[in-house]
Length: 362
Image (cartoon, rainbow, N blue to C red; front, side, top):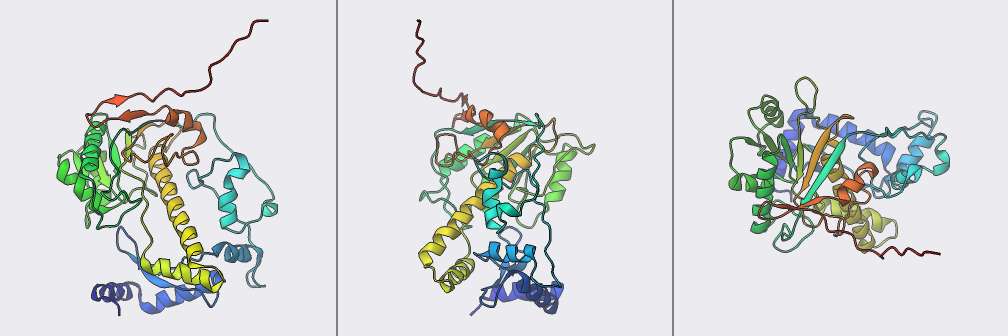
């Protein structure tokens, strides 16, 4: 039985675009990317609760590969060009860097006919400020959360202090994984110069206020990707990009069951399905972090920003080292990051220990 609020959301969707339109779109997409055993469902985005068709095929690369090579005379082979400055997460160099993405899409290495890499010697600059000695964001030390998570109040206070420190250095975009976290921060730092993007409010209005100098910071869960915040004349506006924590959110129970069913139908176990699914969830979180921290801050070759991270699990010597997330040209800056303390002070990175250099005179 579907809950009443879900029926209401489904009815809103039907009124907005028409169920026949939705059904036709789904059947068209399903005929290309899936087979008759594909589980599917209606889903709602975790931020704006916008209804959509949900398809999470564990073997989507096989379908995509079949599509690019040509399914029939009506759908001949196609050429694909992939381009992004922030989607890849890998420690490899050159074309090997895209191996995980190529594998996920089912594109063989021999199918790549040409390769060119265009990277300027200098494109933006970013320095990093990481979390010092502070507890885990959640009371039960979980890796990710939902809207009912119990936040660690010490971590919230620490994050509020970091946000206030950002304000002193100029225009700030603070990225949170959820509206619940935005509301928590507002209760701690309720200043007129901060625009809080709460559920039901509009991000574009806050951006206009930031451009006009009416506020100094925006705290939002909706600007991790696809948003370029600049001055009215196109020049750099943001001086700080702050990330409260790693934006990893568990899949819905519906998506988890659909994913597992597909695995089981191919002779795999549910444990195998869960391992793959949660690895994807983790990678999506890391990719989103890269898009938010780097992609929102560096928008032009001369941009210079400070990236602040309040999550104590992130750092060169911590659980999430970000070796494949921070671009190569910024990684030395990341390794030399300062550490923000609960009292507001910043301390330099600990010197690396290694074998002493031995000079031998002959």
